Length: 86
Image 1 (cartoon, rainbow, N blue to C red):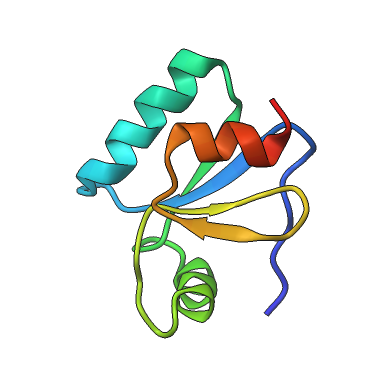
Image 2: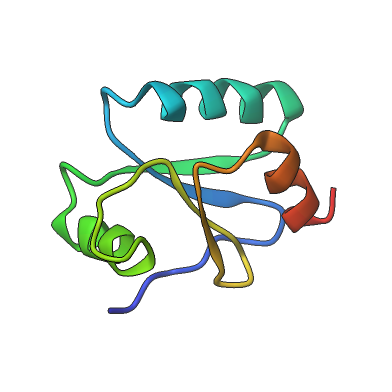
């Protein structure tokens, strides 16, 4: 499956509307001024497939996609900043 990596300095968050961990991370990214795009895996089946691929068959969110093409599941905002070089 082909996934478009985010631009440098930004991340893509795969999420659901009801995910509390996602809401918390969104708030933290906003507070830190880190730009992000949210993709709801319940509305986009191809994104759900991507999340399953990086999470050993599970639809675990938040899954974050970084500009280098790597992904992290439920990372802290500290980890996101570190991986973005901030």
